[in-house]
Image (cartoon, rainbow, N blue to C red; front, top):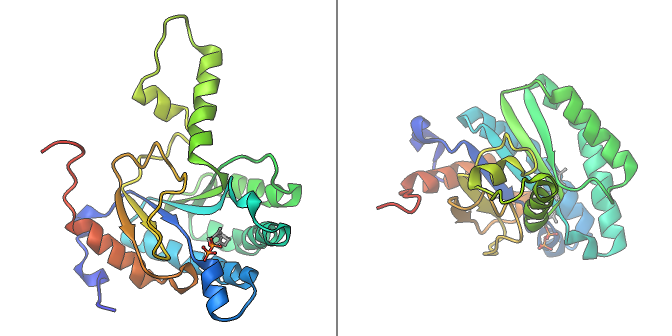
Length: 238
Ligand code: FPP
């Protein structure tokens, strides 16, 4: 692939990049491997991509690891995914911390096996003060649920006649410190948002790539950033 890294404008790096890591199952199928092997290889890719993102100065990287709809998959696969996530945090927690990565969790803890939840919570606590890059893991995440939960919390507290504003709504989302998404990447050649970060995606540039997630490399991220820098963002203006 062309050397996109050297062609990037360091003054125009998106602050928040969100990735739908799609195609693990198809990758495994192509190689006649079990689907879980695809997820395992997919998890291995995460570290290198996070390193590459930090290297170019991306401040926030959101990764869609499990959606509220993924419960509909075969029980074995769902269980395997939780085990994988647990193992990922267990084996990476030290390195993540040493590299100055702050981990956030966006999603619903209810339903997640307690042992998985425990290591996630441990990672959150241990990395809370880091600030080189923020890795936001979207786990048991649904974009509509995120907005609805915020609205419902607000409804219980609102004063009579008070209306919700965009600013207020943004402060009610999970992890309100996360800014809007500037660039959303989806791998595997599917052209969908799949209930991901609905509120924050409002003005994001969308890049769809024809690569299955386990084959995704730093060079693909640089390519997406290069495409992003070629776009003209107008935010509804002229
Ligand atoms: C989509 O592939 C991917 C997922 C549903 C899970 C993503 C999970 C990982 C990358 C591994 C765990 C992550 C971390 C951060 C440790 P798919 O199964 O929908 O693929 P398909 O569309 O080809 O079937």
